Structures are given as structure tokens and as C-alpha cells.
Image 1 (cartoon, helix red, strand yellow):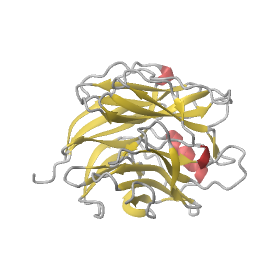
Image 2: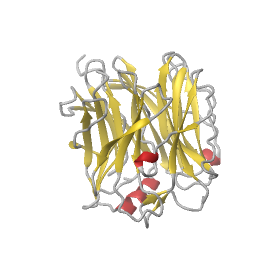
Image 3: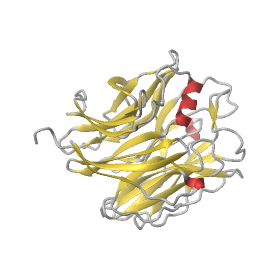
Image 4: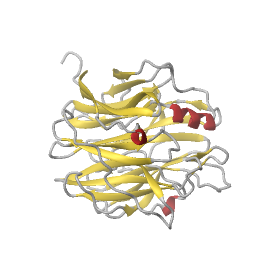
Length: 375
């Protein structure tokens, strides 16, 4: 395994967009790499925040100037801002994009309320491009009313072998809800290429267990999915190792998450053509380190690893942490959200955000060959 080349997406040095987080990459049939991210003046509770995107037609050697692909409308008379976006190639030059909208009718309020353990209203919009991401249709609001809470996206939509698409998100608690917060990982399915979204699927729903940041992907058979979680034990106030859940029926049902033996926060996994599964994670305990982990198949243990990025700065998380302390630490992360994009053969693209200060970060990527030792 080796890193072939690393890069940073170039952007204009502007204070209003100096914090770049929540990266999203997609590979189109033409070979184009789409890339997007949240851009803000500071990482959390910023007055100004938006999403930006760009693309490269030469495997990351050059990028077009970053731009805001769409503006999201008001919902029920309330203004909002976009806080994340994700892409899915649909064939040819057609692309689906999902975006998170957050209520900004009271911008002075924090996104996460530590007194209630609630979030601002967070919704999902979607739109389409017919020209490889260069322009987009008007955004449409996804109906997530059946899940009962704010719905932050947790990653890109997933296309299964039968053509259906899964939208992945978390279900949190609305402000003013007096009930105990029970965190859920969930999905919605589209059977018509992203036009409509129905039939909510609850992936995790365990009181006092927080299976945050679900990172699912479909395997080569088009039916089986594997999902990794950043895991917090709410009773013991302790971060646990990454946990893994599996689905053998297109995401309809999921196994109880199991310990992987790897500590940290996971990213999207991929399966290579030879059947190996690669997962990426970040461990911030002593200093932030991003690592790719490899196993020979779904039911094998992880047996190989490659360090992708090491930040020579102090550690940024605590294994013993309360819920509100966890949110405070997240606000101070300056390296995070690593993911993998499969490029074919034994090539993957690892991408993440990184910087020395949490309010000044860039979107970075590494082109990686995952050849086996001795090959």
C-alpha cells in the first residue's frame, strides 16, 4: 500500500469561507472528480455559512474555481443556510446532490442546545445536474416528517445493484421536545432515481448509546451493506471503539453493531474488486492521525493499515467525556471527516479536512494504491 500523490483543493483566501469542513467527493463516468464542502467564517455557529463545490477533469492536478452550486429557499417563512452537500453519479452526466438546510430564523441560537440536548431544525433538499455538476435544478425539499426530528446528513447517497438509492442521516431532537433524546441512525429509499423518497429505515435506535456518524456503503454484490459508527456510551460517558453493522437485504434490516477493535471516528468504507474492504478512520487521542484499515472480506478482522495523514498538533478528544463535553470538543476539531472514494482496481481517494486551527482548515486528498504486500 502506498500514497501516490497528495493535494489541497485551492480556494480564494476569504475570511467568510476560511473554515472548510464536511468534504464530499464523487467520481463521474467521464472521470471527472466532483468535490464539495461546507464553507464558513468559523467552524461552529457561524453567522455566515454556505456550501461550495468544484471539479477536476485531470485527477486532481487542476480544479475549476470553487462556487456555490445552489441557494436553498425558506421553509414555512423561515430562512436557512446550507451546511453540507453530497453527490451521487447517476450515469452519463446526470448527478444527484443532497444538501442539508438549517434554520437560521434565530441566528443567535447555537446549533446544539446543551440544556435540552436538541438541534436546530435541520432538513434535506435534493436537486439534479444534467451536465456533470456545472449547473443544478431548483432544490426540492425531501419529506422526512415521518422520522420525528432534525435530520443531519451523515454522508453521500448510496446506489444499490437494483438501482434503488439510499439517503443516510441521523435523527436528533427538536428544540422544546421534553422527551429524553434517543439518537437514531436512519435512511430513506428512492425507487425512481432520486425523484421521490419513502419508507424510513431505522438503522440504530438504542437508548444511551450514540452510534454517531454512520458510514455505510454497498458491497460489490449490490445487496449487502456494511456500516461503521463513531460510538459513545452515554451511560459510562466513554467513547468506545468503532462499531460495525451489516445488512444482507439492501439496508432494510441491520445487525447489532459490533466492536471492530479500532478506536476513533470512521469514514465511508469501500470494497475493492478483489473483495477486500477498506475503512478509514481518525484517532485524535494523542494527536490527529488518519489511517486506512484493510480486511480480506466482510467477515474477516482488519489485518493491515496505512497511515494517510498525521497532524503534529496536540490531541483533540477525550475518551472519557460527557455529551456536552463531546459537543465542545467537536467544535475544536481541526482535522476530520475522512472518507474513501473507490476509483477502480486497487486505487482509492482518501479525503478529509485539516488545519492547525479549527476555524482555518482546507480540504485535502490523497490518491492511494492498495496493492497487497509483496505484489
